[in-house]
Length: 128
Length: 128
DNA sequence: TTCGTTGCAAATGTTTTGCACCTGA
DNA sequence: TCAGGTGCAAAACATTTGCAACGAA
Image 1 (cartoon, each protein chain N blue to C red):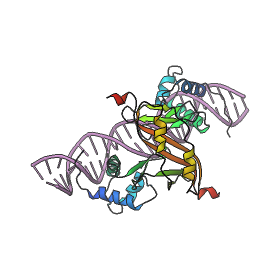
Image 2: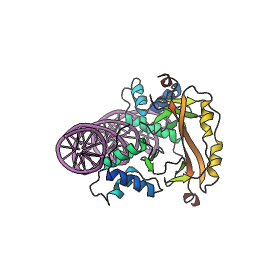
Image 3: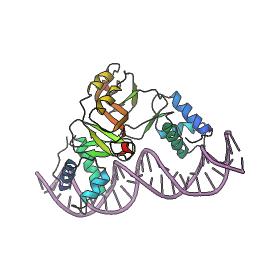
C-alpha cells in the first residue's frame, strides 16, 4: 500500500464527512470546504474522496440517480433513496448479510460483498 | 401515460436486448445496431433505452462502476459484478424480497423496491 | 394532418488527469 | 531532498437536449 503523507485538505474532508449525516456529493463537499480553504480545488476533493473510499475510510454511495454521494460512517448500514426528493437516508435495520450465502448457493465465483439500496417515498414526501 | 408510436429503431433495441445475456451498455447497443441501421444515432439509443426502462420493458443496471448497463430480462433477478474483469452476470437465486420487510421495521417512509448487487471474483477470474 | 420519433450536433453534468509548483517527512 | 499532494485548466466520459426533417396513425 502507498505511503500517505498528511494533508490538511484530506483531513478536513474526512472531518467534514464525519459531522454530516446527509451523504453529501463531491460538489457539496467542495462548496463547504471552500469556506475554510478558499483555494481548494474540485480535483483535490475528488482525488481525496476516491483515495479515502479506496481505503475504506469513507463510503461511496451510487444510487444510480444523480452524482455519487459520500458517507463518513463506515459501519455497515443501509441506505434509502427517496424517489421524489432524492434525499438519501440511513436505515436502522438488522443485518441482512445472510443474503450473500443465498446468492452463493448456485454460483461458482466468490461473493465478497453486496450493496443494497432501498427506494420509495421518504417520511416527508409520503404526506403529499 | 404517453401514446407510443411504432418505431423500427425501438423494436430493434428491444429485440437486440432480448437476445443478449451480457447486459450491454448503451454504447454497445449503439455499435451493434449500427450494422442494421447505419444512421441510427446514440441519442436515439439513449432516448429509447430510457423510455423502455421507464416502462419496465427493460432493466437498467447501475453498478457504480462504469456506464449503466441494460437487461432485456425483466423477471426479478439479481446481478453479480466482477471486481476484476467488470463483467456482469445473472445470479440464479431464491427471492430475498423479505429484506424489504426487514428494512421497513424501523422506518416511517414507504419502501417500494430495492436493488441489490453482489461483488467479488467471477468464476473465470477466481482461477488466477 | 398531427404529433411522436429520428439524426445530428451541441451542451450538460460528473469525474479524471497532466503539469508545474508546493509541502510534509 | 524527494515523493506525495495541490491548484488550475483541459480533457474524458456518459448522458441529455434543441431543432429541423421524417414517418406512423
